[in-house]
Length: 300
Image (cartoon, rainbow, N blue to C red):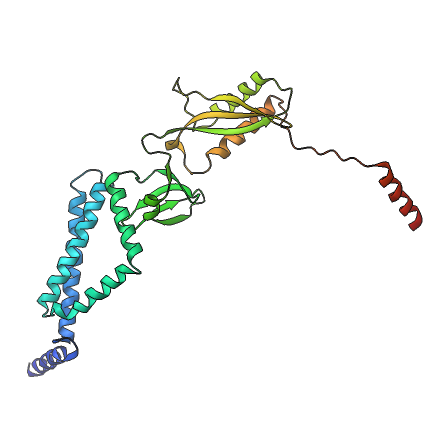
């Protein structure tokens, strides 16, 4: 028993020996172990707090619930860390220099992070953007919103590529939200046919093509597909297939236009409608032909 007592006593002495100091506070191994235990407890409390807030509403994906749970999580961490440092005997005044460093960082490198954080709070409160929306950014990026965080929003493209977009881009730039209030939108699909083609036959083929695409709205009498003659071009009659689509049926953003072009080509072929292609006429002058022939004879 005396041996165990001596080992325990020596272990406590080693654990209480100062490793280094911060201000007037000596940092020992025992204090570090207790601090790690308290941080683990704070993490568990923060997780329980977030789960409890999410249970307040059936739809935990609601932006307000998400924002409240995140802010509560940060609040628990901040209070927990301050309490743990004070309980361990740290003088918070020893960390006063960190306040100046953080303030300096916010004035320079962290200002973008702060602006993205504020933009994320605005997005979640205004509910102008939600998970599942199909958006088009001013930069040309098109995709589906799959995650909204306080600093960034994750956009998934039609190639299944996840792009993290800073939230400030949604506030300062133009954003086209295809599913903001309603999932039903109208698109225009341009196509051309040769001169002399029956316009009514073109309309019949275009409407048939639209009805063969699953995303087309078919049960709304006010939103039926139509074919418009929009321009008489240099070598073709230019039409537009105007069709209402249900974005909720779109599995991969960016493939909508391709689906209608595919169906159009199929239907135009069934109706024997010619799709024109650019032609070029080549004129040869007799003098040039003679020179070429003469040089060929000389070489022979």
